[in-house]
Amino acid sequence: MRNALKFVAFGLLAAALLGGCSKKEDPVAQAAKKEVASGVPAPSIAEVKAIAEEGFIYGLPLVMNYGVMYEYIIDRNSGQYKAPFNTMYNEHRVFTYEDTAIPTPNSDTPYSLAWMDLRAEPMVISVPAVDRKRYYSVMLVDGNTFNFGYIGSRATGSEAGDYLVVGPRWKGETPPGIRKVFQSSTDFSLAVFRTQLFDAADMPNVIQVQEGYKLQPLSAFLKQPAPPAAPEVAWAKFDKDLVKTEFFEFLDTALQFAPAGADEEAIRARLASIGVGPGKKFAFKDLSLEHKAAILLGMKEGDSKVNERVATLGKAINGWNVSSAFGDRAFYNGDWLLRAAAARAGIYGNDAVEAMYPMSKTLADGTPLDGSSHKYTLSFAKDQLPPVNAFWSVTMYDGKNQLLVKNPINRYLINSPMLPAMKKNKDGSLTLYIQKDSPGKDKEANWLPAPDGPIYLVMRLYWPKAEPPSILPAGQGTWSPPAIVQAQ
Image (cartoon, rainbow, N blue to C red; front, side, top):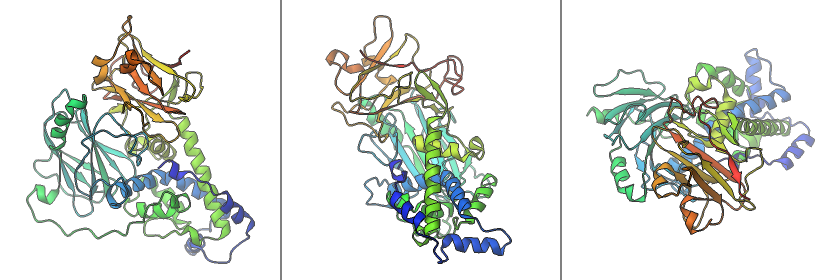
């Protein structure tokens, strides 16, 4: 997804900037005419560019989410297809380098997924009783990429229970037997189940937990007749190349299922002034050359601002970026640039109280990590392992694409359940060896294979402790991730 949203359109831009004004009433011009008819001045070329920039930043998470949903749920030939809407899908494995739909995929909790169509009626998520020693969570995230609720070890406990997920327009009462109601801000919503895997031999136990996750319509839960089905949707075919220019066509599609919140009314009105919004059909190919140039330049500048914001997320501590960039609508409070940066850094990340994600691409002095020419170590002092209520991990990604790295031992991370098999130093500290080649059989238990190039490391702290030592609050906690050291 990240690479799909890089904009290389210099040839088109040059033609647009040199081509003069087209007299054809393109989609932006048509929208402007409506604005003028209602007493609002038509946006100038400069304003069109500014709106495209703002709209790109606002819309990026919605379009990224749509792209993942299209590959996972809609396009059966995508190579990433999982299951239809309103169907539980269990991955009886962890993600590997072959999983490419989502940047920075988690590879230490097997996933279960359920993409819910909430238009016709709400859906009921049922979870089994889970051993208190095994962490699990169900993150509810909508098309706006707001995390609107949690079920699981931290949020609701380890007991069995039934939970209702409703759409943005639902106004019913809580049915009997339902422990809690969660309301999505969009018609389509994703439930991401994470179930802790202790080791490879533990997979049958994880599968047993996964098979206890259930999803059903409210009518089936109540044993009542089902309401009429929602109408079929004419999905815009998602294409990672087309999105470079037809971004706003995909945003049109996403917005029709996302009623505007109070904090979105201003940006929605500005987008409507250039012909973008629910029920509209923005068509880049029909734009005049001036409008094409303005739209592309605006998106390019918006893209640059998102990348700049990603680079400044959180606080730099020992070469790690420690931030809290995921949450619900209230968390973002209209900060669309923060939301876009969070999605680009790693879409579908957890709230800080559920998991923290220190990320690093550099040494403490800012020197980029490069597995092609250097070896590194990461050492935790005695009794200074990441402080968590559940477990922690350090995952390796390719710095070029944020995907997992193919390696000879099929190891993508090191996590706390692996500690018994790892070797500690004489002083009780723990050292991880970060390099592309084996550090030797005597150190291989502590080896985290690196790519032959740029390195991107993500530390995950599941259910971080709130009391000291703690990584919370983000960037101000009493515990900090140790610096990565270049081996001599």
